[in-house]
Image 1 (tube, rainbow, N blue to C red):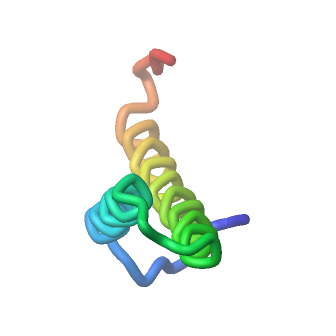
Image 2 (cartoon, rainbow, N blue to C red):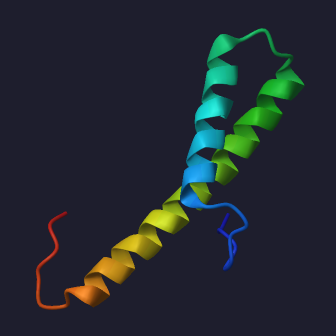
Length: 71
């Protein structure tokens, strides 16, 4: 699964929605189908957040090309 080239949600929006998905899953009381749907949405949101973070890392690396990155 890959994030879209031009995401429609900001990192902050995706992170907040992901936190809401986690809260709902942890609260329980959902049907199996509802839980699976939320899990799938959570995976999409996590990928979107990774996309935003990867782009931020790339921009930082480009802005400071002489500095070594710590992993």
